[in-house]
Every structure is written in structure tokens, then in C-alpha cells.
Length: 129
Image 1: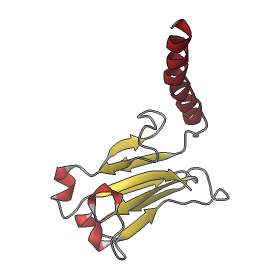
Image 2 (image 1 turned 180 degrees about the vertical axis):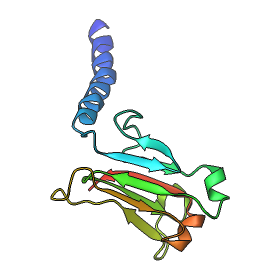
Image 3 (image 1 turned 30 degrees about the horizontal axis):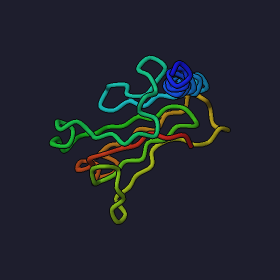
């Protein structure tokens, strides 16, 4: 019985420890800001990496939002028209430098003023390039 409890504890603890190590490999230049709020950075954390996220209702209902800034050379944000990060026709936008030869402080900013359909975008996913 004690072995079983120990095995279960190892299964629970190991993934959390591994996730902590993964975050330490993300350098401080990798940042994602949506409408002025950092959602991915050393300060705000990296929990959103590889997770589908929805834009706030206020952003979806505002024709001038979302405005997305991606900084760093190995992070990108993929924006989807539909909810749940589902592709739909040609309404998908990848934002980010994705060039490790570029300056590490490179930033790309995209919003409805540059890509018109973003005013109706509903979800996004942050990934490594």
C-alpha cells in the first residue's frame, strides 16, 4: 500500500517539476501582450504556452481590438476566427518574428488596423516557432 501511495505521489510531482524546468528555458525576451496586458512573459508566467485561449468578451465586442504584440525570436501567436482555436478557411494569422538570426528584442504588432478580420477573432494559441 505504501508503494502505491509513493508511485502516485511520483506521478503527480514529476510532471509539475518537468513543467517548471521547461519554463526556465524560455528567455526573458519572449513576451506576448494583448491589448496592453502581458499574457506570456517571465513576469506573467508561461502557463498559456500551447494552450488554446479565448479573447476577452470586451475585445471580441470592440472593432478596434485585439491588438497583439509578440516579442522575441522564438515565440508566435496564432489567431483564429473561430473559438477553440479551430481553423476556418483563410482566417488564421500567425504573429511573431520566428527568426533566431533577428535581434532578440524584435517585436511584431498586429491588430484590426493591419488585418481587418482580427476584429472578430475569438481565440489564440501561443507556441514556440
